Length: 260
Image (tube, rainbow, N blue to C red):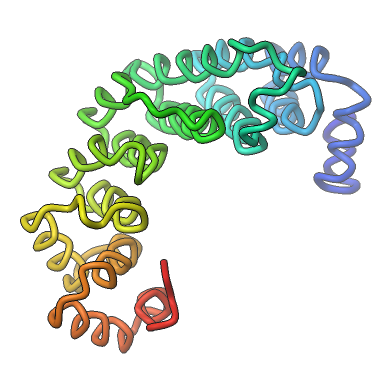
């Protein structure tokens, strides 16, 4: 029925069918059976109101031997997390310890190197969404460990889960990362919230990255707000160069009327 609903009306019909089935039946479908059925159940689960009750079952699926299912479970948890607000996070409809426990379980899974990288990255993104809703202020040892992971995609996802103001110290560590995508993500977050915390040595690396025509365009675009925040004569000249770039993304980011 879920497949038919998705084919017939996309997300709208899928949500209607998901609500009819409810979270308990969707979790049961996601836990076993043909892969296609499991994947569509995981896609549908975040659409139902009582989906947070299934959070422990979704966390358990992160170690499923089917990596597509495991990654889909992480994606479902991320969608649930992205639907939270600080008010909703502390509402009467959720047990008080559910979200912190889910965040901790996600970060524990993300540190397990036996789990596929894409699943680990998805688990971090889901934990980050919960963390933002909870407005967590204490530095997390798990994030500190993830910033030292061997996989750049894991380190970048950890950076993107952090807050530029509350987690400035952790993000500052990532400014020394050997991978330009991790460096750019950390810089973009810090430059939006706390540009003054970026030391001069790191600023020089960011300027070099922004000017490097062989670097990934997305990484160069991430550090454009830093040039605007640093605001030296050289930074303004580099912004003008980028505003005339062949890349539409760089041109858009470097325009004077753009903040990010």
